[in-house]
Length: 240
Image (cartoon, rainbow, N blue to C red; front, side, top):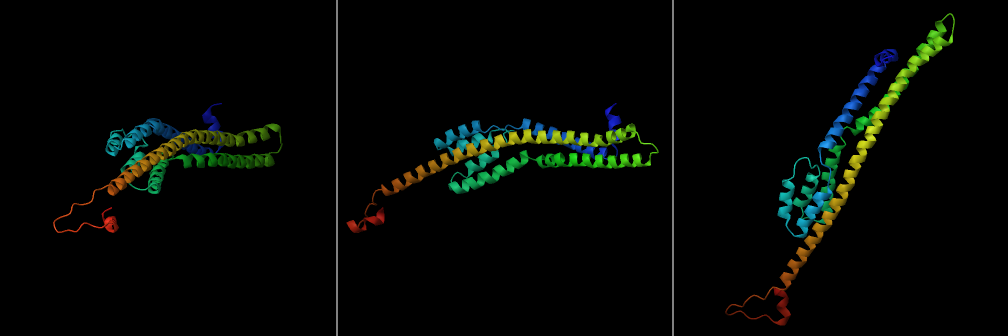
């Protein structure tokens, strides 16, 4: 018996199941291509940026990110971090969180549909089975003589929709789990790399601030002009 024969025997509920199967396969293939095309590695960019930041060369860090290809999907996250390296640690974390959420949402596009299809397909299959069982028992009630063949044929046809619904749900849930695992690994890498870079940036900012503060205190007293009175010991604070 061919697949087409099974489809015809399944009844009207096989049509929505056909639509669900096409949608499941299409979304799965599209997400696989999308994730395979984009480079989700973050560690190599993080190490390079960390080197630039420790050297105090933010301009080179920006140029490095601008020179990367669009396939590096984590570039916008790190670029938002580097371009605003002068702000506080708390604000940096907020910016990274917002940019990361946008990036992760683009990776998870279609995942909700896979979850919905994984739930709708078996329910539609069960509904087709119930509808088929109703028809089978009606045939039994209307038959002048009841035999095992009538009962078996009715149940056989009714269970086809359940089988197809479960197969579609299985494909959808397996695809969702595998794709989610890839995105979760990327999310973990983003958190780790961005956390390290924020620590590097804030540490560097503290060093610069401390150096400026030290230079201000070590600045020499201004030279006196003719007619000026040299300040007393009690007024030296005006020059520090």
